[in-house]
Length: 467
Ligand code: GCU
Image 1 (cartoon, rainbow, N blue to C red):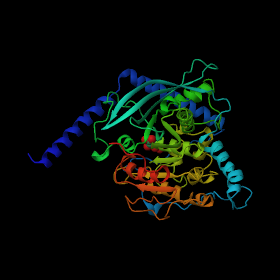
Image 2 (cartoon, rainbow, N blue to C red):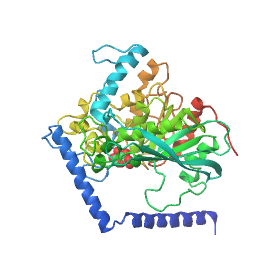
Image 3 (cartoon, helix red, strand yellow):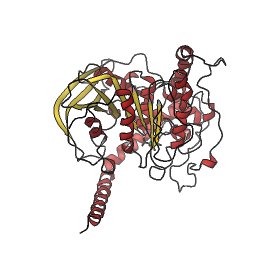
Image 4 (spheres, rainbow, N blue to C red):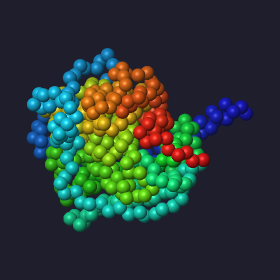
């Protein structure tokens, strides 16, 4: 049999396996069904109570559909994009232009932070309890062909004030086994165990995207480390979950106020607590830490990067609306989707207003200013191919989020995106402190890892290769 034939058979059998695997995983038992229904009712009730707190009597406008064949499909045509005016990141509320770094740091940046906290992502409460980290286990591990030292970590949140809610942040840290000195680490918002149940714990060698080494292998091969932090262990990913997790613990199980933090801010807070631990670990160089995530975790990565100065680099994967994508742009996912009962919990309650009595044009800030909050630290904005990933994430909208943050980077003596023209698929724009690349794959950061690493070397040095 020819090699080509063997490859085809292999791909077909793998697809059949994955199809049946996914089906088996997604068939819910009656108990799961009833739990799901209960959760949905709880989410709906929380969503309605927040609307009531906000005094919203007008129903929310529904968002467009992500299904391109639906009659109310989200816009996917550039020619149909609306015209909009973006708030100027370098214009003070008093109408004066920001002309120097001092004014940015002391006046304009705090104004933008305040707007994001009050209207979009919510504020961190005053009284967040402390986290104590425990090293649960240390063992040698093999990642592809690389040897690593794996630490299982647990960040236990002090719940003395409300013992019925327990929060334990889960994280694993893997550093190269042969390292002599503290190494840079990329923290991913992700999964330690597969969300689909019993998947093999170690990815088989080379089974990254398109047969490439996985991101973990690529980092270890450079002599860098990685950590995975589990967002759900910080805050559940649903409206129903707002009475639990770190948000529920601080509120003692009671509903949020309209400017209280949402899940994205809570996940980002968890990543800051991860840094607190990493600063104490002698295997880690806490001056060279990056945050990475995809999709909702890409949004969280950008929020973390914006609000946590200890992150030196960001890798923001397909973050779409609520992440790097300009929210005023009518293309792909819209504010109306984010502010619906399915996703409002990512944000503060006030955000719901923009899909009801207000519109996205009323927002005091937009996504480019979230990117600007990261300045002067380097951020890489990543997207997949519209043909494979689809248009929901709006790659160009994310690109524009980077473009319009450029002025702030420039003011601080850095370079934003090297071009304001949307590049052809695959073209890396990596010569500035804001970088962008739309890879040829799907909803993943996978195919952009090698480009990201090459870009990161400019800031972190070349690393030490291990064989
Ligand atoms: C939905 C949602 C996106 C989000 C994505 C994900 O598609 O609309 O905003 O990024 O889920 O996290 O997978």
